[in-house]
Length: 430
Ligand code: S3P
Image 1: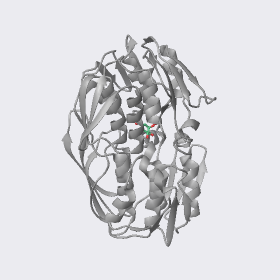
Image 2 (image 1 turned 180 degrees about the horizontal axis):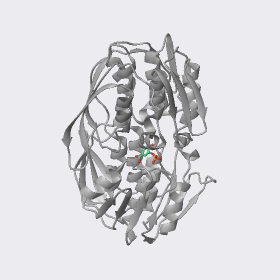
Image 3 (image 1 turned 60 degrees about the vertical axis):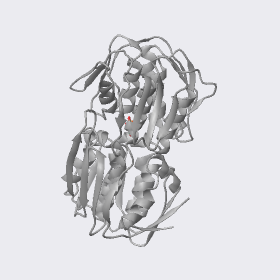
Image 4 (image 1 turned 135 degrees about the horizontal axis):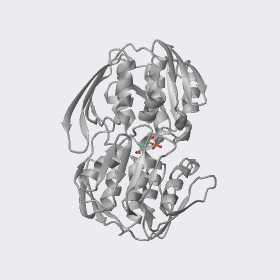
């Protein structure tokens, strides 16, 4: 399926973005490890989170819905059933990596597989630490690629320093630590999203942080009733549209504002964006609030390796904003973008260059000269939800029409994104 976008002005309105995808995955997995029922209000409808629910169902975890609230019947720490078939994680690396950590200490033999994109993504990053803890994991795809065959066993806690900044790796190790003997510690080089840590604490697990180190003790989480805030990574696309479509003013309600996720907001403020952030609820486990953005003239800034790690999912969108900003922007240390749902470095450069942007690809980043007038073209999403949404926003700022191919992949994180843009006044031509 394709969607066509035209230059738009005066986008206006208020939006409640879909519930946070990262938090939804974790809420479902951790609830399944409790004994008893957990209520998860506003669970994400994103296809990735549905993949997590399906995998948990195959492990024997019963789920039901009361309107938008998901009820999960946890089986306790070692209560999963032996599945008869491989678990299909779809497009979701978070599902695969977090479930690998969860299953590493279970007395089961489980195969985790996924779609064409997921089976080409690197898994050595979790195989190494989970094997060091005592699990037997083989990458059947060769070269550290899925399917992953996991034979869970007795785990021993350890201190681990991941060679890359990754919340998925950190979370996989911490989840394995729940079933290990002794303390498990992860030392990071950059603070990545800390949702797992916050949830474990809320669920009564002994977890402590000191600087960039986090340690967890074994234990079984207690049931906790979650209410998932809006996904700031989805909100970013709407904010981006407000910043580059003249005359726009958009308010986003109930957005998650966990400081380990708000680097995108810090960066656009540094670029001169007219953005107001108000924290409205400092919930015991996740802060949330309102973000208002208006059309703004932007200036170029440098995006450091540290910035890139803290806003990795928003980098393609920041690159689009940089094409509209005055001056030269350099993105450094963003090599991890090559290992996402697609190679987001080359996908971004290829499509935005075809629209007239001046971008040079470097091995681990990009150099962008702005501002440049964009002209619509036909671009492929590379079956990547975040590239598809970034290209749509680019189309709203471009002369003539922009066609985004393989649009249906936006369901991975933001079902109905085109309808939301339309309701704000964007020109979305079927
Ligand atoms: C995620 C962590 C990030 C991010 C992904 C979601 C998570 O991946 O890109 O969209 O929920 O932990 P990495 O851990 O690979 O950086």
